[in-house]
Image 1 (tube, rainbow, N blue to C red):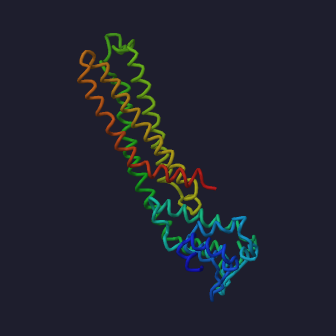
Image 2: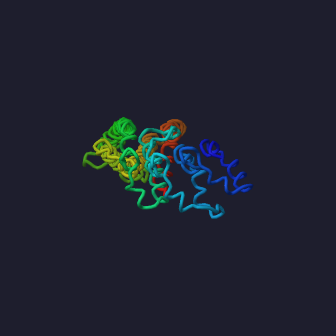
Image 3: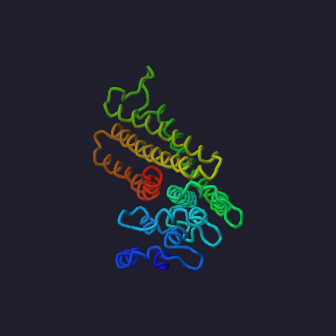
Length: 294
């Protein structure tokens, strides 16, 4: 059972506990049980059994239990997991996962465990800070590199769209009025240009916020991921709006040359098609872990 908990074989554990419920509370020579091993090895599906109403046994005792080194469940959760959440997109999101896991365990242990010390005279939070120092540094580096790349793209779009607002398609007449001002497509161009300009500018500010963050442990929980999430959203809309403005400009300039206009406009979808799949996984991951997590 303990090995099954270590490797997350929930099916085996379910089968065995139904056959003999007492097996769920077995402990090893270090006085660590199934939930201790689940916490150490980040086996969430096994850990969730503690919330299962069908599991009958000394749950309250487990919440307050300590091993031979006087480590509570929270002390164990404070250690850097062996997997370190490598399935996540980057160290910053791995760090977020570690904090979420710590808080999930913190929610079920007895309040006294939060300040309890083990045989090394360390509190859970002290162990967490010590064991995650390198991950924090890696997370900071990854976040800055990612934000720096996106800032460059967003700044470029801002520059282009700002210039496009004053060099409108067709130019101006002798009175300084845009030649295509009365054209309905011109309104589409101006609106798309404005949306692209403002969303790219917002993206730049959000990414700058990431670059200048303190990078404290708790920043990885909500602050940094939310900035990155909304920065990605703004960047995506700025690219889409830029392509809409481009298509509108072509539609005005190539009236009477519909075939050429359609071919040229079809290429406008390429940046969107490239951007969406490449960043979709990152977007979904941040969205789920930041906005949908408990």
